[in-house]
Length: 492
Image 1 (cartoon, rainbow, N blue to C red):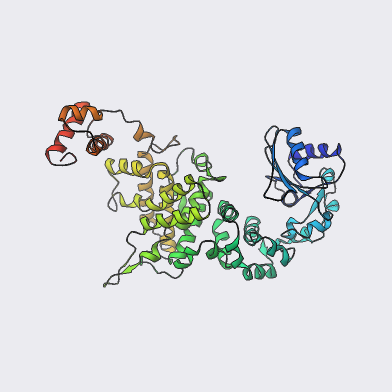
Image 2 (image 1 turned 180 degrees about the vertical axis):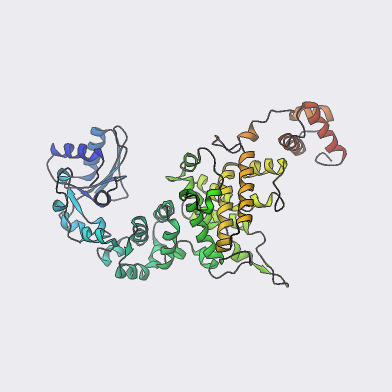
């Protein structure tokens, strides 16, 4: 078993106190699986908040109560070799009976903290629910039906644990979750959001989304997705809208986890620092890659509402990207994402078509088109390139043709290079670094214009021409303004 060094420090901490202390839940489960737990869960016979404060004072950190329950507290440690959360709950009816109230058997094991360094740990685990056997058999089994009724977010957690560890949901557990799927609508939106994002954070998020759907949970969480089921698409698409969205999530995962030479993704353009970039946090504790997968799940969310069929039989989804932005914002706000997260996903949904619209098929975008892309798409410009690629792969499915795929990769590589992505954390750096050739005052003085929106439009026209290499001096910029005014452009 692998316990972090903190467990030894905690064992030493509790030796000086009276009462009992047990490692419980995920800490025991992960250690049995050979994984070092990210967080530590403890059950103690003392007041949880008092213990949390003492741990924080002793090991360095701060503490607070969790939820409204006075018997659950958290110590956030940051002063030693190990940084993370220690969640503490007060034992109510004895450790064995308390374990019977937990969600799943693999989470219902307890280990006396002073036994964590024992040679024969298995023999000292308190396992009244059969969690050890289920762990070895690869099964996620509910402790009781009452455990699911007590906290409906556990319905989602069961699916997450199954996919996270590559386990199967025990049949009665799966049936009980499905029978209670409607209860998830009454759950705290913040907790639903976090559980959904934890599923998307996994390397096989597509399997997690599929399992949520099989259990009847997905369209309770995101009812907008129900409208996408069975919505056919043009012949260029292998999947209907719903399956396309789920497959797009899978392709995002593949782009970041499949690096074999035989994979079609070996051609996929990447940039230096990609892993660090996508590991950067966007909001509510989740990184860019997880938000990219959420955008993949939502990018065509407005297709059902915008679908039309012309007399010729041609299927179209006009405006689905802009309508999709509106719907994505509503979803994100409903799930209590912060403003940055809302803007992040909504921006990708709005612009997900843009990379392949920047030039005719077989051609590369002009410098002006590249400038406009980075100007308009802004902070999600790089993310949108990878969303566009996942969208492309999910559209083609098994119909993917090597030559077309190569052309797509060349396009994305060209856009990445133009954005100065290599070595940069901000795709707009190359745009921002352009030297200023003229100011608004220069234009007003030279052409006797009044201040107003026209001046800003002329300055933007100069910057666009500068980015494309058409002007590089002050006089060239002013000549461009003069020409624009004479032809009745922005200044007319």
